[in-house]
Amino acid sequence: MVRANYRPISLCQTNYKIVASMLVNRLKKANSRLISEEQMAFIPGRSISEHCLLAQEIFHKFKVSKNKKGMIAIKLDMEQAYDSMGWATLHQILKWYGFPSQFSNLLLECVTDVRFSIIVNGNYSKWVKTHSGFRQGCPLSPYLFILCSQLLSNFVEQ
Image: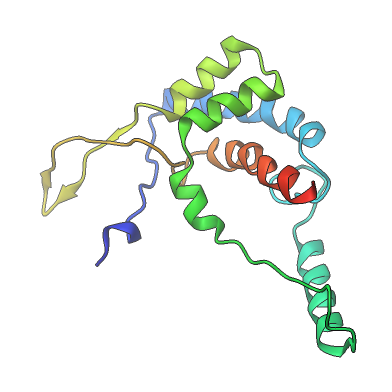
């Protein structure tokens, strides 16, 4: 199996979960103001199912339209972006949005310098240090990824 198919799943300690939950609650309040209307996932009061319906309508329009010029659809592999998001980028995003440095530093401490040990046949492996990417299962990851992906949305919009 290819190494790229393995993704760390977060099995965090209770202390971390409490801190992460507090940070997530603060991010939830800020994200609805900071993230554009087009982003639907993980924003309170927004539903991603609206985008599914919109995509179906757009592709139906492509199918039945006689005007084939000027129509384009782009599908992005966000899974790869999620797994390889750089922490320097996250740091710059937090600065760009104007988050207080104390809040940003606490957030960064939660996602950077993470290390894992893998149990194989009852034996622990050596510690594996991560260098990028958001952990699946960490409550902070989706909210931080949305903040970072807003840059792409801004670029596409321009």
